[in-house]
Length: 289
Ligand code: NAP
Image (tube, rainbow, N blue to C red; front, side):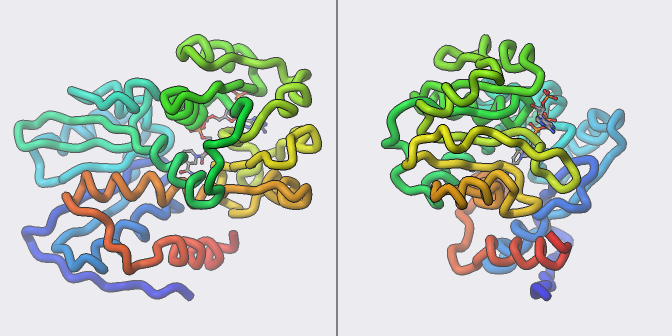
C-alpha cells in the first residue's frame, strides 16, 4: 500500500490540475501532490473530467479565475491548443497541448511538454541513445506519435512513421521535413536501419490488441521504447528484453513531462527528495497493473 500524504492548504492555495475523460486513472495528481508536499507549498493539484462536448465551456469558466493551469490528457489535447490565445513551438508543432496556463488578464497559453518527457525518458533509461546511427521508427500516427515526431525532427533525427491506417502516417509525415511514412509490409527493412523504435500506438494498453513488430530485424544496439505504461512492461518491451535490447518505459515519459509542467504551474523546480516513480509504481501495482 503506497502512502497517502495529507497536505494542508489554505484559502489562498495555488490550484492546478489535470483535465481528461476519463481521468480517474491519471497518475498526475499523485505525482504533483507528492512534489507539492515535499516542497511544502500552499497548493493543490486536482483531477477534472468535464463532458467531452463541454470542454471549451469548462476552460472559459476558468479564465481570470484563481487556477494556475491544467495538464491536459485524452481526448482534449487538440481542443486545448485550438482554444488557447497563444502557444509554444512544441504545442504548435505537435498540433496538441498537454498544458494550459491561465494569466491574470484572462489569456490562456498552450504548451506541450510531452516531447521533453520523451527525451527525458530516453536519456534516463537508455543513456547514450542519441549517439545511435540510422533512423528512428515511430509506430502510430495519433496525437502521441505527432508529439514524438515533432520532438525528434527538431532534435535532428530522421523519422520513419508506420501506422495501422497508412493514410494517417502519410498525412503526419507531410507535416514534417525529416519524416516519411513507410508501408507496414516493409517493416523488417525499416527496422534493419533503426537505432530506436518508439511505440506511440495504444496497442499493448490493457485490453487492446498487441503489436507484433519484427524485433529480430533490429540491430543489437537498438533501443525500444513504449509510451504505454499500463502495464509497465508491455508485451513489446518483454519481447525486446528477451532479445537483449535496451528498453524504455512509458512511466519515465509520464514523469518527464510532469517535471516542466510542475515548474510552469508552481514556479519552482520539482523537489529532488521525493521518488515519484516509486509512488506511481506502487499505485499501478495497487491497481493491479
Ligand atoms: P490516439 O490519438 O487515439 O492514437 C492511437 C494510435 O494507436 C493510432 O495511430 C492508431 O492507429 C493506433 N492503434 C490503436 N490500436 C491499435 C492496434 N490494436 N494496433 C495497431 N495500432 C493501433 O492516441 P494517442 O494520444 O496518440 O496515444 C497513444 C498511446 O500513447 C496511448 O496509449 C497513450 O496512453 C500513450 N501516451 C503516453 C504518454 C506518456 O507520457 N507515457 C503520453 C502520451 C500518450 P489508427 O490510426 O490505425 O487508428
